[in-house]
Image 1: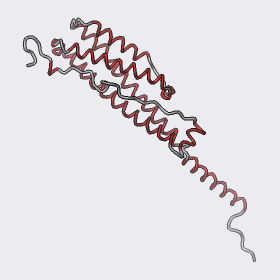
Image 2 (image 1 turned 30 degrees about the vertical axis):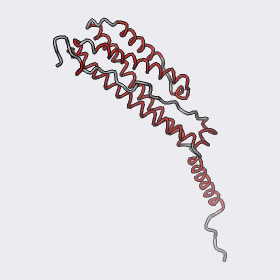
Image 3 (image 1 turned 90 degrees about the vertical axis):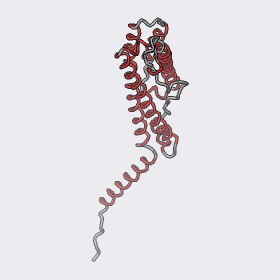
Image 4 (image 1 turned 180 degrees about the vertical axis):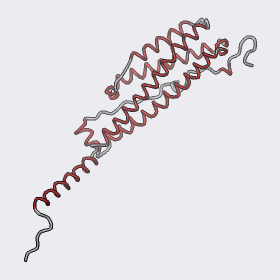
Length: 216
């Protein structure tokens, strides 16, 4: 008597088909079919955190300008520069699609750098007016602004790390196959440190002294 085959033809075909699918899936995964979009989405999700941090900083500036104006600070041109720089920075909004556009990203970063520089100039001005240091609201705003700037730096750094990871992924074999053939991936732009951009626009209250010797 002849023994029955362990697998019937239909079952053998099914097993073969499943094995082919499994091998094909592994091959696609090794070519970046999953890792490329995962890295891209991680960077773009972090961009939302950058925007939130920038918005938090921007929201503090009108209140700070208002307090400085109320203290009868005479350098109105500096306050005008801060106000205009804030308006310019908030008028340039880029979407996640623009993160691969060098020109748009450059415009965005330049506007933010101009705001940082304007705030630095305001710092220089207010240090000459010790009466501001005695105002609790002003001190609280400066602390909040300092925290906001630190948060901006942190979130930018995290975005840069994820953008670089994505850019490396789409340039590295074998992920570059999926990046170019399937997704048409473009590298993401990231922040570059501008001169003085790492300095927080804060007031050093320890260096402020009044004519009557206050603060000594």
